[in-house]
Image (tube, rainbow, N blue to C red; front, top):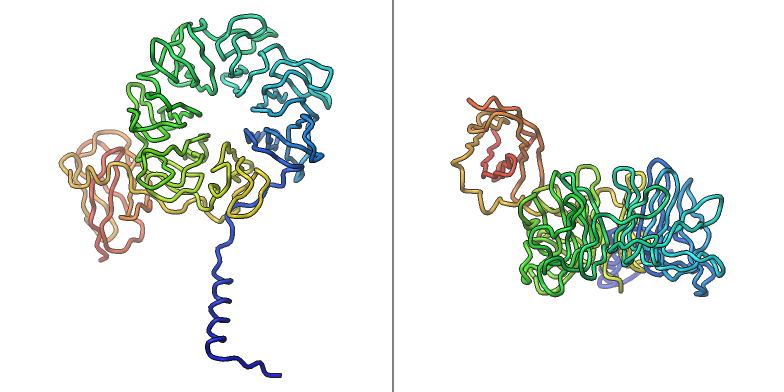
Length: 461
């Protein structure tokens, strides 16, 4: 039998089939959270236990009765860890092989009082002290369990939003500062505890450090009436602060800043909802260090001027967007992320890449790297060649003069920002240092030596 059609119909059919074959496969897939998930608050992975946890709000019976489980994925399947009688569980963490949960709860079930903190053992949740049902983050630092939130007392002692577990009870961390202060994240940086939260010390807002037993504001704090920090990470020796942070309000960076021990600095052009728009917040909600990169997630669509629809990476000099779309939902991006067996899991909105994912997604693309920005400083320093001189001395050899004695990180980027080489060079401090280049095509490249960048012309020979 022969099927006949007009030329126009045949052309339409060919174009339609081509469109189907060329449609991009999704980069994100649902993780399979059980029940009906409302916004999740945290994704938490633990390699030693080979598990990943989601917490937030989940209705297993599709009827909201306030019974909320922690969701655990291990051995290829999901299970639910009991119920806590609360709308929201904000944070979980493993400490000494015990899982702890923090939230805004006052009961573990209808008859067991619990004040914001509980632990899982023998198939049930148990109370773990009194933190006034107001815990938003749990962290383990130097083998010590810390709780942060909106509480003003910890097991009966004054504590402005931060407490640590010591001697079988919760104790305050440092002398409670004056005024109303709540905390939401903590790291250890240069031997000191640094926290972020809501409140003022000496008229400065939002980020605090513990010196001795006294809390003080770090640098100028978070500047502006509506700016605030949401997450912290230490990367390449610097402290990174993410959140709802505005350059027009007087902060160094847009949604993310870097503290070098002395001052805040921008992180490239930062994170933006709309390209070049500094007046609209997009928010950085979580930071993770993984495989030598700093990962950021939130409600942004651009990182360093390149497209990044909810997740991006920073390598110390440039941003790269993680492909896929997490910002096409009512939640507007990802709120938390972690890696399970080197796969990135996120807590997000109802959809990712346009498909329903029930508030949880995992990356299934072939590569985490999409488009990348130029290294920071390329445009500012490309013509400044007085400090270090570079040239092509052989068919595939880069020569450098002017390096100081010691180790130097040398990276090579093309004009589109693609990283072609990353190599450590040990210089004696005099003479010429040389590196064999990878296979390149003729054109303009940029050589970044530590933080100094020069333009480099490569010619195929």
